[in-house]
Image 1 (spheres, rainbow, N blue to C red):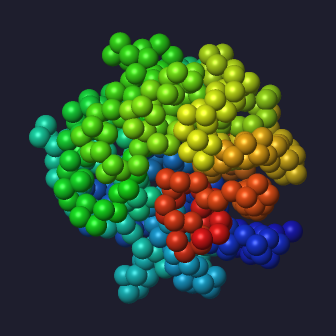
Image 2: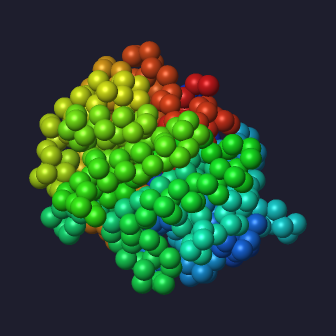
Image 3: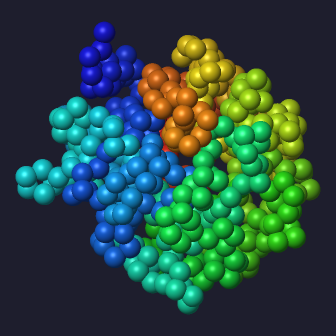
Length: 434
């Protein structure tokens, strides 16, 4: 019987030596969150640390009113782990706040930040510096962080141009997704949180980033937002998101790799994305199992349907090329009560079936580690998320399936390998070969 989280972590490191130790720690932080001492919080946009932007979902284990000081002085966007007793190589982790977590970021007596697990310091912690472009406002006074935040240690500009989703209410919303609640909580807190971002604001923010990002650290942008089932501003989903892509590529040809996260759309709509200059398409399939897709993604099942969704993913590979179609799934919801698999073996078998389906066709899915946000049905029912063992075995199976089909790390995610990866919301890039 394991008596502490430390025991569980070290047991899994020993059982799965092929999975980098860095990935074990990172997955545990992503699935269960981390607490912050006041000494580790940012001074928002007036400080030296890049604060958490809440770029689309909350990715927290508590609502804003429950976060205490972390709701007033935001935590950092990400943290980077190094050293410690596990000799961690540089590991970038997206911040998911959980005041009850056994992990805590705090300063020692010398003011040096560290990550503590069960009260023991297990790594040094680095914070992302405030980028110069965050210090400059748009002409209307809005911040670059609000309009065009960057994540993945500055690699990716994340453009959530539609902050809500038209899959609305219990009968349509994805059961693990808090995009609509995140919108509501930021508005209730009086924070600036633009629902539909005008094209002109996006272009102005990108101009500021381009001017002040002299090291060219930002190399890609993602256009995304909620699903559109009818229209926004008179435009359907392909026209709405395509409008931004067209404007960006005309103003900044070749400056960034363009990516779009949208629903699995008909082939002619996907062609428009490509015609506008988008080079990577993310038609996320969320969860592989048919029954769970129908239960957890009721709106997507109603409007498109699982089989048609998958057909459209394959069709889009004819336009973008299989390597540039990278659908996401939410790793861990396979085991969410009350409907999910009850054993890790069953959950892994199901997920790997989906990996084989796509990877055998040259399409490489990627995944986000599920954060059980408290305002979602699955988050309320599963506050602990999925077992850490599931996440570790998924990393092992993911890499093995890629190797089986001779695939390499997908484009648009930065470098691969432990100590190199910057993709922060799962460890799949940390676990692949360089």
